[in-house]
Every structure is written in structure tokens, then in C-alpha cells.
Image 1 (cartoon, one colour):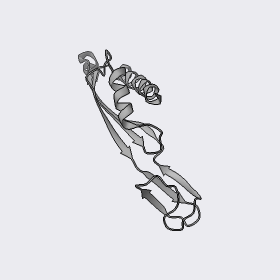
Image 2: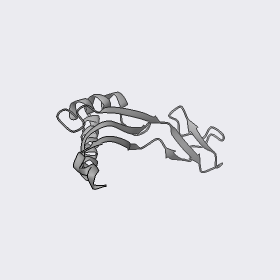
Image 3: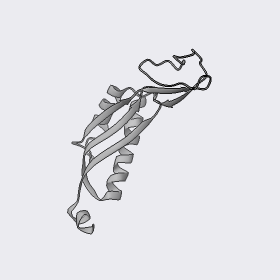
Image 4: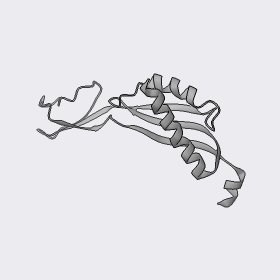
Length: 122
């Protein structure tokens, strides 16, 4: 399952942020999943539930925000956000388009509880 390795990579990022910020635990993780990213959101959620056990994110909520497909047509210059997964330009029908959004998998935000010692340093 591809999503298991994605969940492991996500946990590596989370743990890196926890170390850099001196956090005690993570309470909320928000990720953006593009419709063309190749990641199945429900499988990612299940994989993350397994990966997070026994970590600083053990009780964290994973929020997955879906990112629609956006394209720009090289022929007519149209820019459009699409519900369907077609990269054809709706205006002129050209396949000569560039994907602007919808392929990414991003860690958007983390909510963390800081250690008291870390809070006193600021």
C-alpha cells in the first residue's frame, strides 16, 4: 500500500517539526491531497492511524483537505478549476494544458502543545 509509505513520511515531517519546536505532543495535522497526487485519502487516513500509535501524534486528529484540479491552456490561455479529472481545456478542447494545482501532497499545518521549558525560552 503506497499510502503506508506516505504516512511514514508524514510522520517523519511531524516528528521533525516537534523536535525543532520543542513540542510535547501533536493534536491536529492538516494535509492537502491533490486529486492527481496518487494518494487515496481514506487509505492514507487508515495508514496514519497505524503509524501514529505510540508517537507524539498518538491522539492527533488527521484532517485531509482535497485540492481540485486546476489547469491553464497553452493554446487559448484559459485557466480553470475542474471537478472532473480531465486535463482537456473546456474552452477550446485542447490537450495542450499545464496542471497548475491538484498534483500535490502538502503538510498544511500542525497544532502542537509545547513543553513548558520551550515556552519559557520565548
